[in-house]
Image (cartoon, rainbow, N blue to C red; front, side, top):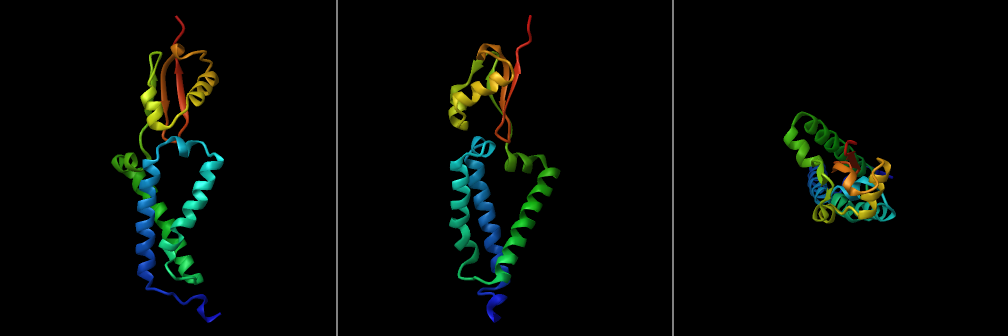
Length: 159
């Protein structure tokens, strides 16, 4: 019981470890693209669980104290709040952290290379078209992959 709050390393090392892991994992998640974050699949859940387990030792080192875990949790929550706060005040940081919508089709032309790069399946694109009442890509004026991974379709106007 006396070891419950005894830290195995200095308090500042917990914070440094949390900042480094947060920044690196955020960068890796951003590099993975928009689509994996937009629709959670069983594979995505597995990735999140394994990712949490993988970075656990990087965060805690040899510490197993309650105090160390709470300090890390507080640091990660504050980091997340801070990134959100800065993102709402700086368009440049927002683009860096959140990304920007990507055009995946325009004027009836589907950009297959963009679909592959963004990891969007043709089936997902076709489902989004059906939801907007488009029977084929020729009915699409503009299709965007939003920053949250959803596909927005703007149908061509009837003439």
